[in-house]
Image (cartoon, rainbow, N blue to C red; front, side, top):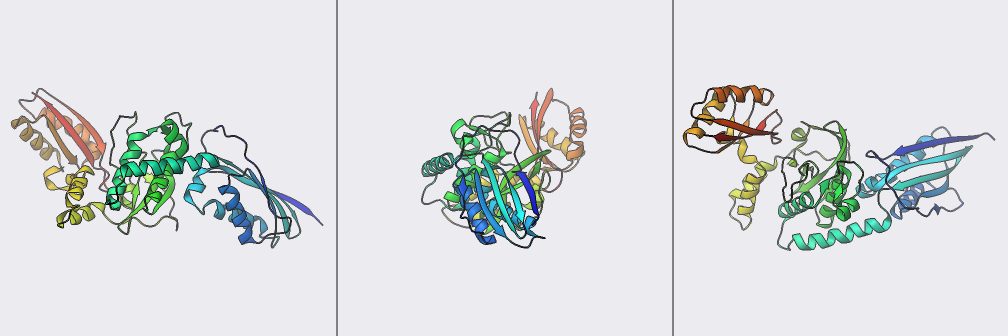
Length: 371
C-alpha cells in the first residue's frame, strides 16, 4: 500500500514577531480512527487546554481527505473568537495510507492557559468597578471603551499581541485590544465579535458589537492616541457602519461578520428625545461622538463659506473654531486662501483629523485664531 505525507502549516493573521512562550503539554487522542465531528471537537479541546500537539487517526475518501482535514482544523480554530486570536501558529503533518490518515497537529499560543484565566479574573474585577446594575448596553459599552483606551497604550514596537500583555504590562497591539474588548463585552453581556482585515496599510483587528439589536464596528485601537495621552480617549471609530468604516478599513465579507447598517447617531438622537432617566446620557454621548458636526451650524462646504466662518469668529474674538469641512482633498490650500482673505487676524493654526461619521472625505478642523 502506498504511503503519502502531506503537511499544512499556517499562522494566525497577526503573527508579526515571535513571543517567548513556555512549553505546553501534548495531547494524544484514542488509537481508533475518529469521525470528522470528533476530530473537530478534539482539536477544540486541545486548544482550550493550550496543548502544543494532538495526534489522531482519521478515515475518509482519499481524494478529499487532505482538504477535509484542513477544513476541519480551520473550523475548530474559528469556533470561538478569543480562542482563534489567542492561537499564534497552527498546522499539521499527516501520513496517509489508503483512506486513513495519521495526523500530528501542532499549536503555539500568545497566552498560556493560566494567562487567559488571569485575563478573565482581571476583566471581572474591572467590570465590577466601572459598571453598575442600572446600566444598559449603551452605557456599558461607553464605560468599557473608555476603560480600555485610557488603561492601555499601543505597542509601537509590535512585540505584545495579547490581552494579557495589555492588562499586565499596559501595552499591546491591535490584536490585544480586540481580544480585551471581546472579553470585557462578553462578560458584560454584550454580543461581540472580532473582525480581521487591514487598516492604514497593515494587518488589523477590531470588533463588532451588538447594541439594542444592531451591529456596529468598534475599533478601540484607533481610538487610543499614539503616543499615548493619559486619560485621553478618541471616538472616531465608535459604533460605525460598514460604509463609514470602509473609508480606511478593509475586510473580506464573511458570514461570521453580521452587517452593520444602522446609523448610531440617529439611534442616539431618537433616544435622547424621549423622556427618560437616560435621556441626558444619550444627548451627551451624541455630542461626544461628534454627531453634532453633521448639523448645518458646524458644516462648511466651500472656500467662501470657510472664509466667512473664520471672519465671523474673528469679529466675535473667538479663540477657536471647530467645523466639519466637506472638501477634505483641498483643505490645506483652502485654509490658506481663507486666511489670506482675513483682516484683523494676526495668525492662525489648525489641527485636522478624518471625520468618520460620513462616507466621504470630510475633515474635522480645529482652527485657533490669534489677534
